[in-house]
Amino acid sequence: MEPIPLRPGDAVPGGWVDRWLPAPLRPWARLMRLDRPVGAWLLLWPCWWSTMLAVTDTGLRPWSPEILLILAAFGAGALVMRGAGCAVNDIWDRDIDARVARTAGRPIASGAIGVPGAVMLVIVLGLIGLAILLTFTPRTIVVAVLSLPLVALYPLAKRVTHWPQAVLGIVFNWGALLGWPAVVGQYPGWPALLLYLGCVCWTLGYDTIYAHMDRVDDKAAGVKSSALALGARTKPFLAVIYAAALAFWAIAGFLCDLGLFFYAGLAAAAAHFAWQIVRLDIDDPANCLRLFKSNISFGWIVFAAIIAGQPG
Image (cartoon, rainbow, N blue to C red; front, top):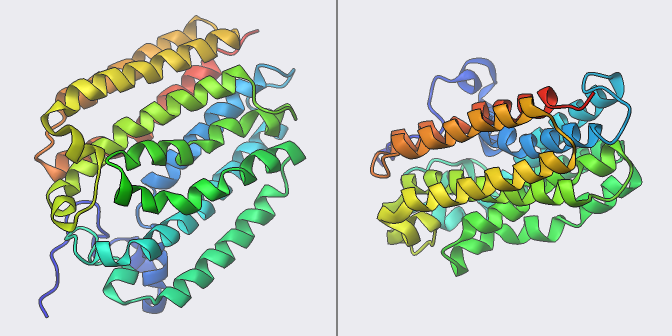
């Protein structure tokens, strides 16, 4: 059988996984997407942003040991739970992935890993994630556990709605609600809720860009997406949804008494959004992937803005 050619977004032979890991471990690393860390970053940013916003409600500094430990725990948790989420997604989507050129080489779809093995990986990663979660405050644990049914159901969204990206936004940004209970010990209030809503809008934007890479194959496979629903209207949609994200974040910053440096950073974030929209070519998968990955840099911009705008 001729190998299915890889498209942007697939694991590229010759990466660190091939160079450093023994052959038996490579499919497992790819199942967790360890060779493609952008998803872990996008899962992590709402956690870190929320943590920095919550610092404004304490007498702590962003670089205090207590806060650095929380940031580290969120980092480890994001890496582990993103890997578990990818495995769950690939278990649900194994038949669809086999019919889409970009995903046909994924470990489960290609037969490199069986479903029982993938389930065992999810269990192991889930236990590691639980161990990390238990280092947080009780209210953080309660809020985090509330997301689990949504995480399990997300892979079904693309089968029933053209807006699975919205469902992803609801699930993927739950960390925006965790910073407050992790730092302050209280359930999330309005700043965290507004941050969360802005993050949902952000994900709806960047994942629509990502979905354009699979637009043709998704249509052939009967899979729904916002890219298929929007088509040529994608750029105006991004302008609206990104503006909504900025508005939610600006109000959250106002409620936390963030200073002018925060709004200067938010202006830089707006410029980055504008750059994404102007540069987007929905018919060029490599262009879509590049813009999608640029959201790692976008996360640093917002993170720095929150820190720079800290009151006092």
